[in-house]
Length: 317
Image 1 (cartoon, rainbow, N blue to C red):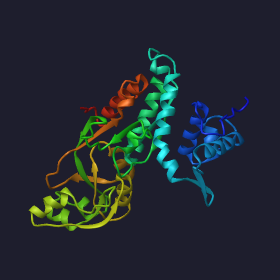
Image 2: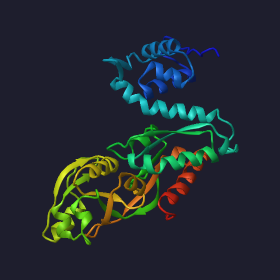
Image 3: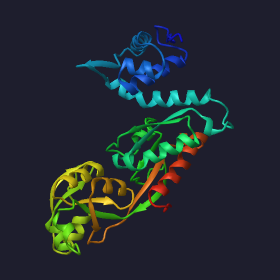
Image 4: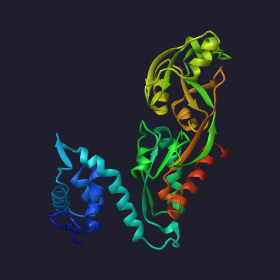
């Protein structure tokens, strides 16, 4: 198949070149001429020509060399969210009628999920979509420190994890409510006692999970009410890394009881009830209003509800 080229007036364009918008969207997503070309099924030389024209149009290099990689300029970072939103809307405009069956749609959705859900929930979702909507593909993105900008900027289509309601611009929905439990490796002292008391719990070294690097939280507040404190041996950003560390050394890790069960079993960890009262954790999904009425996105949300309920033992919202 002949590769497509990306035409553009060398002057500031006074018309919309959809191919060029697609090229810019791919370049800013991949930070690579070769990967952007592969994404759009064109040749690397054609993508290089498109980048050259985009640089002239915006009077900015957009992507600059940093060692062997390309990195976006501040102007490119400023454009990225808006360009992605425009490209998505253009694709939707020329897509088949909304009355078409979403189960036959060919789409790629960007999902922002925790690494634990990537290993426990996503495999089941992929299998389900292969059967229910085989044209849907998923591209997983790591969690960000901020909860909603990627949704607002169009970089992520659906966020799944610990969702904090309150942003009126973002739709959110609770999926499951989880109880936190303690986990240790089999030869840890806590694995050998009949009851893990608050005193024993506090005397153990702990791994804390915090994307923001916070070493203290509700557990420490509850222990302080009992006149106790714990030593935090390390703070890690994800549950998966915490569980792995707990399987390799004598530390206590906290994890969601049901959604982490597969990892707990795989790593051979022993679990116990946390001996202080803690609030439950709600896992949900969030999406931008631009996708709310999209029938294929609605199907993705429907299958997410179904699979999440199954992953949590049939308990859903």
